[in-house]
Image (tube, rainbow, N blue to C red; front, side, top):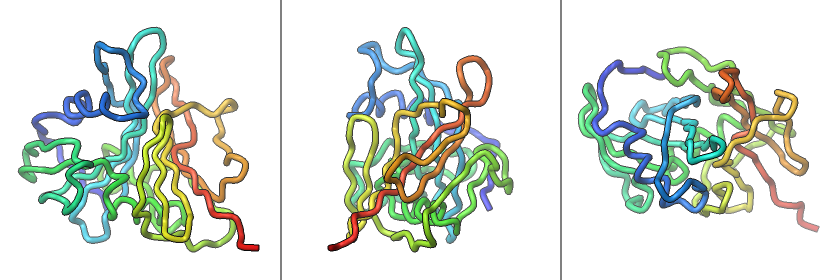
Length: 221
């Protein structure tokens, strides 16, 4: 289960993201740069206990209206081979020491656990409390699966990041989040599964919305 350390991180996650987010094609902030705050998210457990996995929701206040971004991150005690382009930055953890922080969409450990979450084999954990399931995170899957564990092809778009498995199955990570109109997230037409979660809305209430979609290739004629 996830263990949360009450300690320091220098630089902080938000400080690292302030420099990294403007380099992403799905970031829509103003020229003055992001003004970030953490407003939600959840964690997943690495079965080996080596990699920290966090799906963070951050709020940016670029002007007229806030924008909410889903930023999956992994925290490692050593560099991830072949993932230099996915490195968000490095930071010094008060308990664990030097940490390499990556965009989790490029980290195979995080992607495998996300697929397990969609399938119902992984349990989401509270973002800031140890050993506590996050009951605000929901998932659904049409049929029984299985969902592929490897999605090696990663492509960013203006609103999402698509992870594609060798058989054509896609995990679409929604980078810009929108609350469900009626407060109850529903699967989009054509999606075979999804993950939904919650974050703090501008009025102080908890918003809920889709975060990840599972898209399967059409059947072979």
